[in-house]
Image (cartoon, rainbow, N blue to C red; front, side, top):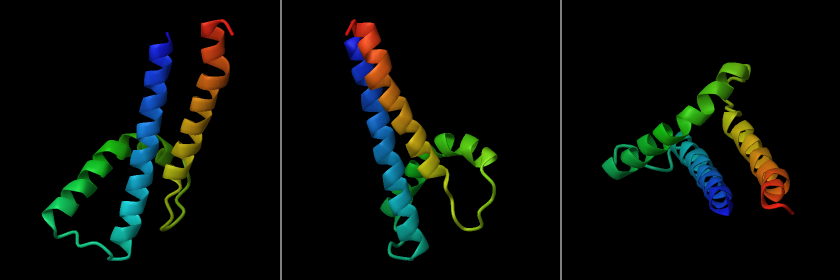
Length: 98
């Protein structure tokens, strides 16, 4: 059971990293800091989009349109934080008999 909890924590941590990397990439793209005509940069951007968009899509349906500001990454990070806290402080001790 400890392995399952550790695996879930690892997956949540990877999701955190991908969301933050995606946000940084989108800012660099928006301010023309990176050259999106570069094939490697374009591939990284598409990969980050494909990995994070399934997390953002349900949140974007709920949130109102805020113009040019996308709050869905922030909302997903908060949700992941609460899931991880629930997992580590409530579910894990209950399953491990602590």
